[in-house]
Image (cartoon, rainbow, N blue to C red; front, side, top):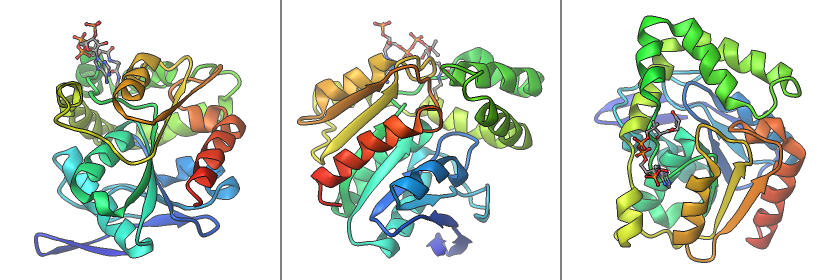
Length: 252
Ligand code: COA
């Protein structure tokens, strides 16, 4: 799908499951293929953010830039959509809500936070010793690496092929910060919101999700046992059940 920004047209790709107004947004360095388990069982669409997968190249400097492309794709898919964002994708859907709320039917914040500071050793290490740092990052991402072995390798391979994009995405995460705005009430999410986090998430700890739960009125919080940051691939059954229940409650 073509999206125009500042006079430049960029092709933005998405994967489709059974038709349902749900759009999944992946995290740093990944692409829409991470959501295959959800597309198959729950349905909806999974975007490849610019500069990866089947999407074209675009100038991206911030979460706002990504949110623009996601919103423009969503507008062409359905009048109102439930946005499911993981990690960086969770920051993107928060920003999208603030700027394009008329198209938001609901939000699902997965392993994400209102502020996403990144360990300095990850940002530095990706420049000086990328392979070692990606191993560290992957180890940090899964609750139980042995149980999720297939996904661990798939994710490692994907990130090794996209070292500089991973660094760029994580640098963008590091700057993302709505924490004080949520605390002061300057930023408020009024859309129906489901918060999902893996009990063993070390990149965006449960504390970040509990914070959302405390500031988003009427939100629901699901802490998935045994899962880490990659909760949707680590525990797809539990994840999909939780998501499906939320979507049914919205009659989506
Ligand atoms: N929601 C709620 N609370 C948050 C938050 C969020 N999204 N982000 C930070 N905070 C809290 C912290 O828990 C901390 O609280 P405390 O003072 O009670 O301990 C406080 O705000 C300050 O935290 P932070 O801004 O992160 O700075 P820091 O110097 O304490 O820590 C890091 C910096 C990088 C060590 C830390 O952010 C971290 O461990 N991040 C997770 C690892 C990572 O790299 N994740 C990648 C995310 S994409």
